[in-house]
Image (cartoon, rainbow, N blue to C red; front, side, top):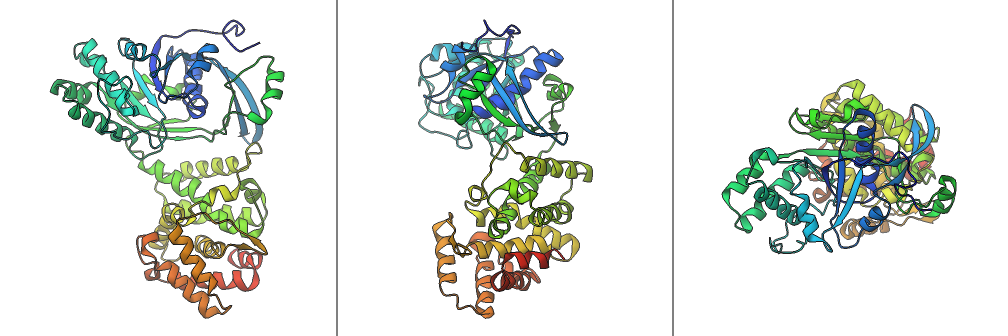
Amino acid sequence: MKLEKSIYKEYKSYPEKIIQFGEGNFLRAFVDWKIDKMNKEIGFNSGVVVVQPLDNGLVNKLNQQDGLYTLYLNGIKNGEVVTEHSIINCIARGVNTYTDYDEYLKIAENPELRFVISNTTEAGIAYNEEDKLEDRPQMSFPGKLAALLYHRYKTFNGDRSKGLIFIPCELIDKNGENLKAILLKLADQWKLEEDFKAWLHEANTFCNSLVDRIVPGYPKGKIQKICQELGYEDDLVVEGEQFHLWVIEGPAWVKDEFPAHKAGLNVLFVEDMTPYRIRKVRILNGVHTSMVPVAYLYGLNTVRESVEDPVVGKFVLEAVFQEIIPTLDLSMEELEKFAHDVLDRFRNPFIKHELMSIALNSMSKFETRVLPSLLEYKNRRGSLPKRLVFSLAALIAFYKGKRNNENIHLADDLEVLNQYKELWGDYDGSEDYLVYIVKTILSNEKIWKMNLNEVEGLTSAVTKYLIVIEKEGIKAAIEKVMI
């Protein structure tokens, strides 16, 4: 028995007020879950019409299941390990632009349409000069969207009340502003009337947004067991973690039209999302990156093992609360709550997050995620954050490519790997050569965008820790930094 509205007694249809570009796991476990809760709990009364932005996708399966699917949320909630599931009922239908372009354009003719939400990957918000208005469909997401908006503009004769609110979820900075800029560029390329460009400016609102939820996706390995427990077949089951955060930067009135807070959802409407983006990069991503070389060399393999280990877990905790949080400008209450949430997410027993999957391109990740905290700590406190400095030393040791007698499969830019291979290949066991390695790595301005040897005390501090790691091992070294 397949999941569809005939077997879901609580099924309800809603007016199509939201067009969603993308039908993948993330949007269904994040945005559509929110809309479902808003519909059920605060009477938001909004249905979603899903547009499949690529030729191959899931809209046929969505339509076969009447837009219904089961979402499992697994993780730590209020300090307890929780797994819960619900049927999501907010998607009205799916449309494939490649097989039914006319139906796609007809979406624009709906006067009740109000929101455009998208997640077409980071590469999705990109200008494609080959897109043409007469294409059916255009190749890029912005091309498809520009054609839809122009059709709406013509349908309603440029009525300024028929503009839309855009909340893209692609993981690029200023995603809404970038999308708007590409739409205007396409309007110029297609030689569309000046009033259409004015309508884009005046009638439409482009928000920037930041999304955060880990979504492992379709539970392929256990789907048979899940369907047996549910009592129905569902080809669109999706799993996500309990934590969720959506930061939306835009006019204050958007909050009134999209009142997610009234449903108890962690959706923040802000004038400037920069502090939240920095918070996520420095705390969540920064902890990941600073943890990897320390924990992996220590003998651990997963994020959960690392934060639950009595030694490495303490190292991580102190790095976050004593060295990263003091460099950020949001309220201490907000920062500490976010940090505790992050650590709970790392402890999630339902997600096996391998350290080596985070280790990809660790040098550039350290530069963007950890180095700003290190330098800002030095700027504010006048001293170096010893745990973050230790992590940098461990990173240099990690790129030796050895964990005891085991080879480490390093994955990074070829130039980075070649430099480390040459440096560690000539290592003669002396402390003087370790000094040379540190100075050489810290002077690589292509990685760091500066010569880190010029940061007072950093070269000697990194060298001191690297010597202990090399001579006494990571376990003895981490004990010294924890004193």
